[in-house]
Amino acid sequence: MELYQTAIDLLKQLITTPSLSKEEDRTADLIQSFFENRGILTFRKGNNVWVRNAHFDNEKPTLLLNSHHDTVKPNAGYTRNPFSADEEGDQLFGLGSNDAGASLVGLIAAFLHFNDRQDLKYNLILAASAEEEISGKGGVESILSDLGEIDFAIVGEPTLMHLAVAEKGLMVLDCVAKGISGHAARNEGENAIYKAMKDMEWFRSFKFPKVSYSLGEVKMSVTMVNAGSQHNVVPDECHFVVDVRSTDAYSNLEILEIIKANAKSDVQARSTRLNPSSIPMDHPIVKAGIALGRKTYGSPTMSDQALMPYPSLKLGIGDSARSHTADEFVYTYEIKEGIELYIQLLQAIL
Image (cartoon, rainbow, N blue to C red; front, side, top):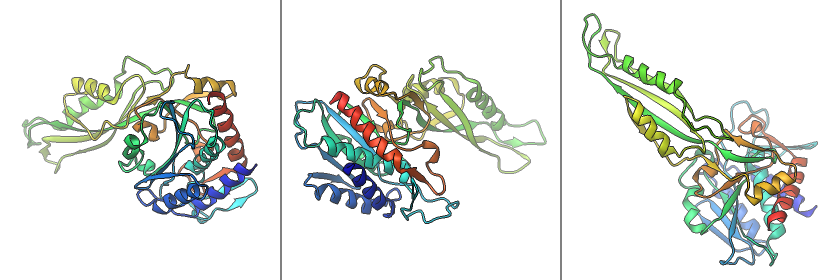
């Protein structure tokens, strides 16, 4: 299968080209050259590269195929060179092989398969984005307006080629409980720690009324606490951090409004931009995937979907459990099967 070999060759080049978040210029060059060598017009902004199908028609709806080419830093547990694309049996090792190089080259292969077709019902845009691992503002968010109107997206992340029809969002909250300073030996002051404890208990026990079918409950966890200057001084402030994993039952702003109405502490969100995402179960792409024997589920991990203002489906080659692990790898047969599934899925709707 020519597309399979093309994908494998490209993935090996990506692995051997370091592309840590914000340092993806060389892999962006590589991807851009890959398309230009095939006579395909490329667009680039920063380290984001995208292409349109040959017969792009502004009168047609548009499907975005997206995955990222940045990686996390290799962790200390690696026993092999993370930037050496070593193929052993049916395993291809290397940083970014599983997350998300395999999905990226698989989507590129599918794009090439349909690129020259004149009878497509949808336009296709393939975007290889940067800074996904850090949810950076120089990533896919920076090119959304450049891509034009998008009707829905397939986001390539390792899902074992099953359909992640919803994905949790994220908010990080900085909270401050305020009291009055005093001497610990006398009955003075108002202890900010005790005030914070009441709010922490609320965060621990509160249940949001609406529960997502795919993602379950909104989850809130107090993850950091800091207060006090010395043992004999009643603290007048207690700072704590809350990790909020939002679901498609609420927007981040709706969740924040509920929290502020209940917590006595001052609550400030570092950002509300990383929203939960979902796609209707009766969407044609979901129905096509189910018809191909794919399972549906809600994903607890976050991707560039969080930044997309339109329906999106997370679907990709490899296993999320291998992401960010030492000696990361992907099975080569997963890539072959993944390309075939991407093509079958798109064929059903295009």
